Image (cartoon, rainbow, N blue to C red; front, side):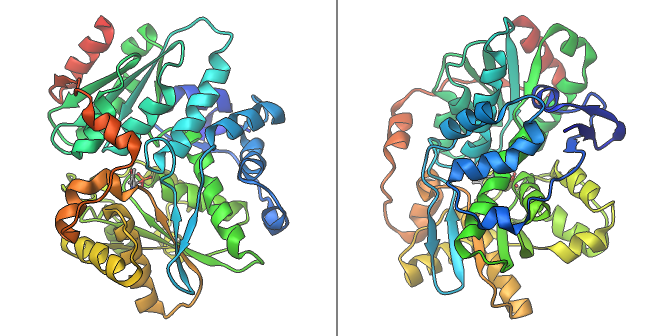
Length: 430
Ligand SMILES: *Cc1c(COP(=O)(O)O)cnc(C)c1O
């Protein structure tokens, strides 16, 4: 399978190159040349999670990875539970937060880490992974790549805009992981990373790779849990997926899963106050805006980078996008009320991102009266956002053990301005 650049269809690379390059040298994002249709027979067959993952990912990677190599990667990457919590007859929550850093980013980060480590096994080169994070990507990537030989990870995160726990998770690993604390927003961090990739001088001197959702290798593993969730209901019934969205990598993976054969009635792109996407659906215009800070901070993205991919999947026709996706944006106040309501009604604690997803599903049902099964993707463990949640529910929430350990460690970051030149100097000096 070849992967082409969204900026120029003539530029195409194989899976391994797409994985290591991250972003195409023309600034475009890689997209698979074709999306294999597996059909509901495949999805209805009895498969465990890694078998399902191998079946879905293999068509994209088979030029570079054998079936058995991919099986090894998937078995070691996806070794944690993926429960579905049913709230009532129609609504359920897909808990994607049982990986080591307690957010859904573990799926993609662990897949990438195991895949890159496989390819680097017999090579004697040092790779630098640059990653911008709004909170959870950084820790998932850091954790996934921690102690992998030949790989250095540099994380850029916006100072004072990630939760205390997220910051501890990012800054306390040490070893091959370095955290840069940027005086700016997530969009600034993302821009710095993108600029680094387009800097030919830098790229000729360093072997750079990215682990942001600009990397197509992150999307592939994220297609699998859509299938996994759908399989619980099965029998060709379309479901609704509500996806709390920031950079829209998760949602884009859902769109790929849909084209591979998962029947979907509608995708809900649920966002916080950062409403670039719902505006786009309303008026067809992508208006870049500065990121607004909210309590669902991992989705504080003004310029979602995967919009390029979505545009590409729908031939730049917003009306086609609207047939598959609805989108609404929700305030912090609505988010807090939702956390409280879900707790009262179901004795179930959700994090602020998941709350946005649930609000999106509720809104869709109100507008359409649809009674289809609705699955909200739960993207983080509530314990990660205890500083937001505890004042809402007026109660302490117990921290999972891994978070307790991280909280006890000393933060270790390098402060930096949002000027690219400073990042470049730093990268060349280490
Ligand atoms: C990253 C993240 C999101 C947003 O996912 P995208 O793929 O960027 O849209 C939502 N929730 C949490 C907890 C996240 O960490």
